[in-house]
Image (cartoon, rainbow, N blue to C red):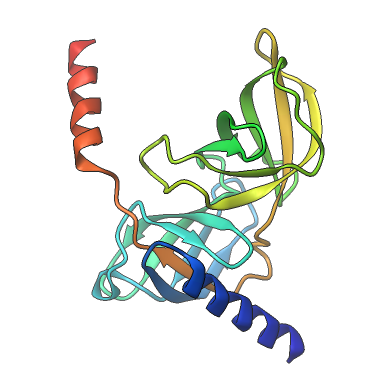
Length: 193
């Protein structure tokens, strides 16, 4: 009961402190046993949930809505082989791409960080906002390990995700939609090449 009260207090604090409008949701189903994991929430188009919107809890990023109907939505959680998000190390502003290595359920990998950027264990990684898919500043996790990267002069940054997908029961959908002007530019750029 104490843990449930703490979680609800944290969610209320998050709702009051976030600059974005949010939709409170409950997790109604989870499939977290493979590579193509999915979470189902109890908010659909009737409550304003849309494909592409991020899902968070008071700990951090959970995933992104990929399907929706009037009543429910399916979320692509960070522990899915298809999940990607542009991220930054808060203390250094170094940017890379987050993915799930499919080996440890709450471990993520941040790639494309130059070795010349000094990082430390315990630093915070959050959404960068540069992909036009997520707002900036959503907490993702903390650095737990650094290794030389696959690319020339890059490093692989291993993170522990803040949000625990196995215990999460309540969350928020962030009412964030990509900027259409940026999307138009991206389409024009693709047509050029």
